[in-house]
Image 1: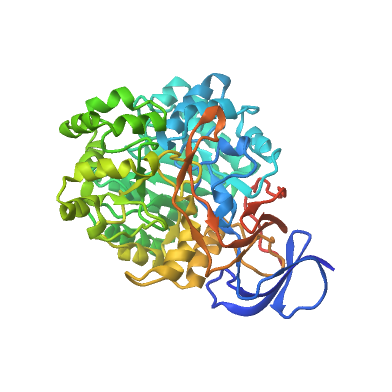
Image 2: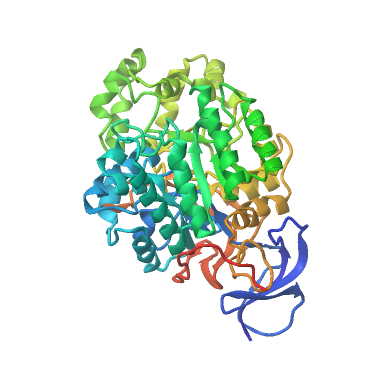
Length: 580
């Protein structure tokens, strides 16, 4: 008698091996005990998986649930998309260590960088910790639907050690560096999987100041890396302008040099984000070639790449749309959605707003106000590789109206709940072929879903479902990924980088983190805005259908799309050895 038997499924084991039909998986005590064809024995619960995929639970290496995980035991939207392990503390922002008088600052940083409502964080976080080990202990007191792991973030560490000097990006003293290194070692030994740092000009607090640590010199980076090395394990994750912001001075390319040097000299894996930039669409190849050349020196530098175009959703309920900077829109921008829609439908208001020019100041916001050539109706199911002729600009030309007029009317559809997709990266050639190429390169890792972050602009935590639906089933505009490659990217690739060798593969002795998926029926709908965060905070959510069961630690957490009462998830503290 075992706890759970999954019978006669199509095993896609996470290693990249071809699918194996007719496979049984037996689970006992939270572990996989047998995998094979037509295994005998009885089970307390059985799942008939004839024609269904059996995969490892998905490992999401780039989330921002740092605050949400302290009050939320479900961790939507990730729970709906087959995820059984998430890694938080990315991009250099987080909530530990933290002195009492630094709480507001850390909330503001998270709000500015990751667009998480500060009011929700202020009401939801209990702050029953000061040190990083105390934060990990606090996380471990809340059982949840999935396991959580975290980096130690550079910004709170720097602020904790240096106070206002750290927040203002002043240079640290020798004593500051020694204390930072010591606290890094302490954090890794208490369970952190590594250290994250932000070095991009795009990450700023609400007052537009740079995130603490952005301007850190090599001696500070070396101190952090030394703290990791002293603990004997850890990842160095860097949100660098190298691969995401081609508008900055090329001096930032020096970041890639020190990443390679640091990895080669310390043996630590280093990761950074890499997207295709509209202004320099072939730059990513040069960057990735340089990254991979570091392997000759023993460096392991990994480019984090998205599974679909990095983009935002423009709408009357999101935090950005093309008319937000128009003077006539200002009196109605804070109205409830229904009242806002009623005002915008008035012919005089429509005519006035369309007659104005946006007063957006930033280059990015100006792009949004007139970039109709790369705005696309979201659709149902959502289309993340839309054709050029489907853009607002092209549709307007066929209708004989201005792009602004059509955009205005599209935003009012579905009583103002419709969205326009605005890709910001990986869409320079109106095709995902370059993204396909990057997903096949050995020096890349599927990442950047940002679960829990950018609550009113993006909904990319659903990328795991997208990998199996679009890339491994539906794509007709170019090459597809095999099912086994898509699953490998979502499971063992991340687990192995973080040395979580107890998961990511369906094999005896491994943790029973599993998905049973009806691949033919798998789909997700358009995002929707809900106000379910603390203090009434809003966020975009995107559910999926087709997950027959998601299993974490041997317990079924999602049963045919419904979240169960099981909460087996705990904190993952440090690396996990491969079971013998």
